Length: 294
Image 1 (cartoon, rainbow, N blue to C red):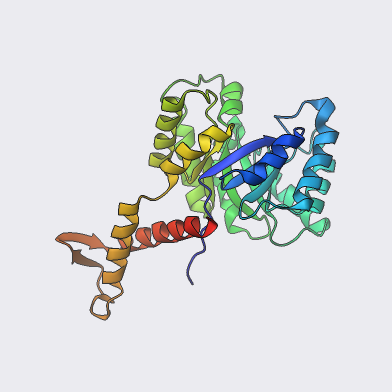
Image 2 (cartoon, helix red, strand yellow):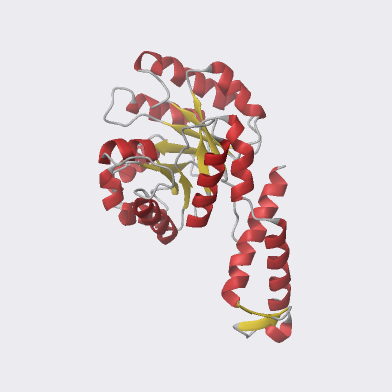
């Protein structure tokens, strides 16, 4: 069976309390929209934000963009109502904040079943606490349990810095062990992973450098805080034309009958292994999905 890839190069946070932003989101060239009820919304505006997000998602008009609602934690005064409202609205996914253990996701998944949520509704998990770093492998493994519905991990580097007292410095050297641990956890669980936000949205050079770093780490995309970050983000996390062309060339050679049983072949004077063909198929599928999204 051919895997189906959904581009998640960019995921833009949009505050649910800002009706104008929710409307503008329908026009942005972004892969994913995270309609936020948590950090971006002050306590006095939580109820209004919830109503506006439900109305916006129910009305639709977001095209091929993946729509995700970030709820408040169930241990807050708003979490339970957020979850019920999100299920009613019917987004593509619900983003769960401050996931510490697999039990946090299992608890949400159970509530989704009780609420009669669509089987197509997925969970995303914020990785933003010291506990999450210590339990990353177990959290990522939830991706193998269809009842938990986990499809993506999201790095919350600002909260992680706050909770660990680590400093967010250029190059993120102090964050690299945690970032790579979570990449490994995502891959082991068969789910995607998105890099954390870049706060200085006016610093284009710094943003481009951090996107390149995330792509080198193996991240599938990056979370964003401003629409001006979308273009550079897509450039960093999209397969290049040369990469896709080479992938198609390799796969065409491996698909020939005479190469069906070979683990390695020569293509254009280079030795390539079947694993390169598998990697190439993923690049091709992502490129095709990006083109189809338009």
